[in-house]
Amino acid sequence: MPKHWRLAPHDPARIADLERAAGVPTVVAQLLLARGIHDPNAVRLFLEPKLNGLRDPELLPGASHAADLLYSALRAKRRITIYGDYDADGMTATSILLRCLRLLDANVDFYVPHRIDEGYGLNLEAIAKLAEQGADVVVTVDCGICSVAEAHLAAQLGLTLIVTDHHQMDDVLPAAAALVHPALPGSDYPFTGLCGAAVAFKLAWALCQRVAENKKVSERMRLFLLQAVGLAAIGTVADVVPLIDENRILVRHGLQSLTAYPTVGATALMRQIKLHEKHALECEDLGFAIAPRLNAAGRLGQAELGIELLTTDSEVRAEKLAQYIDELNLERQSMERSILRGAEKQARERFDPARDAALVLADSDWHPGIIGIVAGRIADKLHRPTVVVALDKLGVKPGIGSARSVPGFNLHAALAECSELLASHGGHAAAAGLKVTEANLPDFRRKFCEIATRELGGGAGLAELFVDAETALHCLTQRTVQQIESLAPFGHGNLRPVLCASNVRLAERPKRIGGAGRHLSMTFDQEGVKIRAVAFGGGDWEDELAAIDGELSIAFRPVINRYRGRSSVEIHLADWRLDSGPNGAS
Image (cartoon, rainbow, N blue to C red; front, side):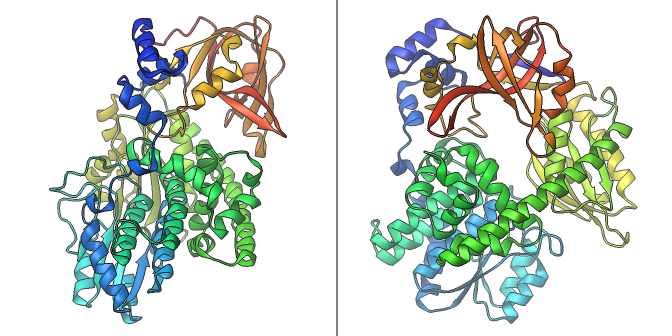
């Protein structure tokens, strides 16, 4: 689908003012202004986020009371169960609290619901099972804020339930012994964008202070907290929460922590995927290398192994787990390619871009643990809210669905409107899960698409690409790109800057690279200046680009490519068009 390029306003006077006041290079001043950062003090906080900039854990709504309850349970040797989630955020959150409590000699274990058999979050059967097995205290991580019935059952069974979560709340909150959530009603915590692992980190920090009876914790627990910052960084990036405020601090310092203070399991995983060879970890290493492997374990029903990897102290066990989880990721990639081919075929047959504002695709051969990735890829490609459903092969149980959205469309609200047609649903505005029977699928598809048409104005919308600035290729020196890198860590809420250039030609025929030829490698030439480009996920552009005998405009993200001790500038192609300058941009 074509994209509309939205070029950021360029105000030379404001750029010069910020450059002088904050003492930053011109290109950095321009990029900061494009991100709405114009105060010199805010610039310094953004470019040099300090670890002591994290807010005291006592300020997080509910954390103080929860820490008191956990400390009492710890001293009384009551049995504590961490109730986790099967995605990377949930695994890292579980691992943070599990390692903390083990180091404090607690009587602790953990439970993760099976993705396929039990689904997301607390469930009544699991609560009953944990009570029967002798649990006294259940601490949820990354789930539970909507579990009203489950909290009621826990109380009836004599369990002390502590809920830690960050997801969107319903009007009625569960009656748990403690609720820890950055956006609890009646609280005024200034940053509500924490992920589940960050919330768990704050609770662990508060508990360490209880044990120390001091704001300053023991050296042993200080090392744990530094390692926990690394795990929280993985969860933060994996859950695609905005990389601003405390999240920016966690990720900036978490990347350093994973190098300087890695857990045994993190070391093994980074060695398995060759990240230990890099001179420094980047946010993309978490998002595209570490998190997908942890998620692969969860998607294929083996989240417990991911948690064991992150918490083990055995180097031998960690090495075996890292190798196995890497193999699971290869299996996940193969299944993903197969499902994506089938889903794209359905989309081609059923989707009319002039008419349809959303897609609902379904098949009984699709694995329910993989469909979320596929929904995201199709939503990105077609710029339409997309629901992908793995139907029950026997048609007896509801199909399991995963949905991904586009800007301007609230999935959580849309699924709530369709609730009478769904067996269950939950999630965020941008990503959600659901269950729907095959009998209700046609009506659900019809109603969901009607809502998308109402909210998005039919199927004629274009995807937007925000472009920070126009530049010439000769300006992309290593020094300039290194200055751009000072805005890292990049991710949701602080995307890697996108630049554009006009009057560019292909220097050679593009060629497919990577597994199944999903990516594209090429070289661009502008007035004799050549630069290598990679289009991740852009393999389908090969024939279109190869057929062009003329000039292009390209939109791209500049990066420093480091290989075998040498570094060079290359670009990651985001979009292209036949040259007319970056028109269509505004």
